[in-house]
Length: 319
Image (tube, one colour):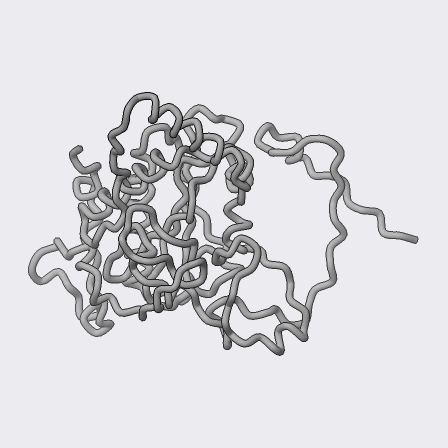
């Protein structure tokens, strides 16, 4: 007798579920004896470690923030990465505490943008062994986008305008720079033209955006990659070359608009990869706790303490 497929779960009837019509549940594949290595594991190259600072919208001593390579359906999609090649469960206590401060600051920065109601913070980690946290902005008033399917809606909604996207990136980078680090995203420059030319240019941009192929967050990040067979795993040359959209598993999504550097290694760029050294970035998250606040543990670990995550410190910077 054939196995009876399970019934469709109740969440397919939720208003937030993006699809309708007849659905059926896939048969579950047999488990594999050994899981394939992620990027940054074994002989596979880590794209995040090799990406230059120019591929990010903001960089600090121990953290960097990356954007997608083009506008998507949500007002903002950003990725927070550690400079050091560590996964979430491998962070030492001081970096783990600093991750909490960075998460709060980045969430507040994105939530301060016009038209943003909530910020979803996600961590999957099936594509890369390098820590990367996803921040997805849910548009204000779009109640159907609430909940767990926001990353799917990102590929269904029409992309926002590139000018608005660039401006949002610059605002978030400037917010983070108020507490340290170096902003690399710049707002779009005004092109002074006759009104008729502006209208024609706007119409052409809207048509190009509508014709662009939509790629969801999960697809672009390869957070759930196709399982590799044993032969592919045995002959992996460690290059970590991406297919399909040409983007990384969440740690390398291309160039940042407004920067003067070349695209990040792993997409379409040709810039030589940089190391994890933080010497090129300005000091981030300066210690403001005052003299004598550093503990012996912090000194022994060699990691500077984070700034005091007080309410007054993380208040929105004056515009």
